[in-house]
Length: 114
Image (tube, rainbow, N blue to C red; front, side):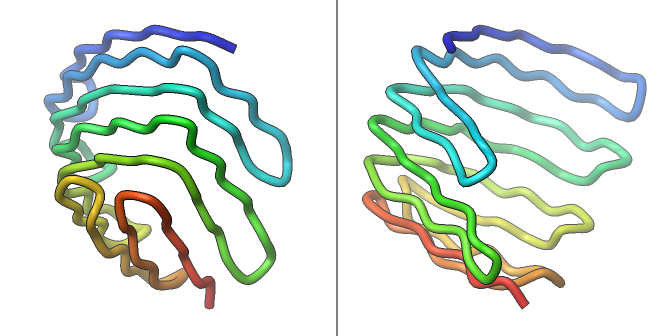
């Protein structure tokens, strides 16, 4: 499925964003993305999100004890909410929270669930 979006809101706090997905298929075991780019900036009652995402030929699998991704990603930004903190720069990053911990590289990511 292809998609494009733009958003601007002050309902739950200031938030703006836009993005385009060339092709993405999602099911219960994960997702496959051909190309996706987007950016968001906001401080809402859901938390902080200042990020730019870029993924190309990216496959994610969701398991009972872990999530894993493989492909090319250049995600950059900071997200902080009730799920924890996610910080990355040009694909390199970490994610920590009450549900687990993970690392990201420009070609792979893994998140272990507690």
